[in-house]
Length: 190
Image (cartoon, rainbow, N blue to C red):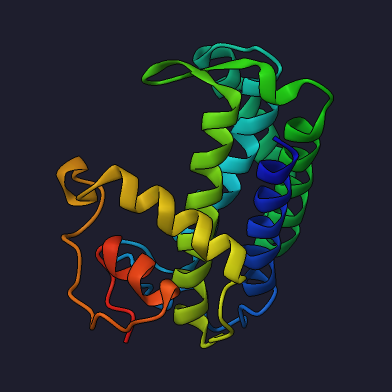
């Protein structure tokens, strides 16, 4: 389980590095997520991190929603600072002793905290790529994160059936693991 936590922290680091690269004039820039600009993408990841502490503390969705809304009001308008604070809170919540042995209340029902963490890793990795593309930060993602996320995405099959992802994009057989991961999530890695 500590490996999952290390991957999660690394995923937050990857996304955070890109958040800190967003220029003042880039918040309204388009992202590979066709319906989101940079601000909306960063807000999405901030929101996800804000949900972690109340869910990991055993709150149901209704109580967690009240906590998240209250927390968002205290964060202010500085998205970079809000990201840093939200990421720190989620790191602490997942890192508590025994946290990954718990169950959390998600919209689909009770879920193992370790499974929730695995989903959060995948989301951080894919959206780090999205954000990097949007702001011109082309550093490759950490190889171990990409391997982990790719294995997860491959095990899920065609993600477009969920309605959340576009259809996979065809890439050459000799494409990098990062390009294969991104293509499987319906994004064109080129």
